[in-house]
Length: 153
Image (cartoon, rainbow, N blue to C red; front, side):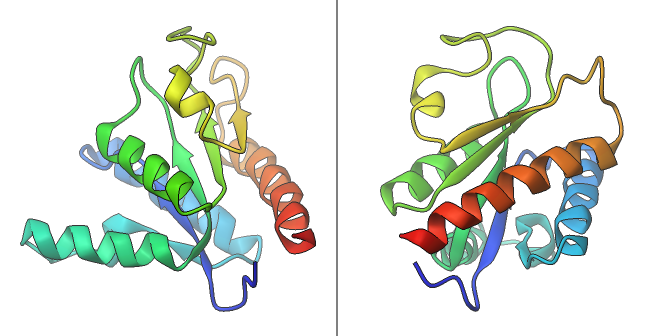
C-alpha cells in the first residue's frame, strides 16, 4: 500500500465536550509524531446535512492508510463501529484504542466482531495511565509497528 498523501483516520465518539477534547488531544499527539490525521469532528465542522457529513467521512476513510478507533465504554460508539467495519471491508488496518478498565463483551474488552476486525488493540488502563502523553506514546508505538507491516506489503 502506498501511504504517500494518506492519513490516519481518527474514529471515536464525539458527542460530549470531554469526548471531543480527548479526540483533539490524541489527534495533536499523533500529528506531533509526524502523521497526518483526519479528525471527523474537525473536517465536518459546520456541516449540518447528515448525508454531507456521511459522504465526507467516507471520503476520509477511503483516503486513510489506517484507522485509529476509540473503543471505550461498555459498548463502543455505534458510529465508530461502522467506521471500523467499513475500514475492515476496504482492507484498511485498524488500531483499536481502549482506556476503559471495565471488562465487557467476549474477550473481556471488546465484542467479537470488533476484536476480529482490528489489527491490534492499544489498551491503556486508565487506572494506571491517565495522561494523554502516556496514551499517545503507546499509540505511537502501535502506529509505527503497523506502518512497518503496511510498507512491507
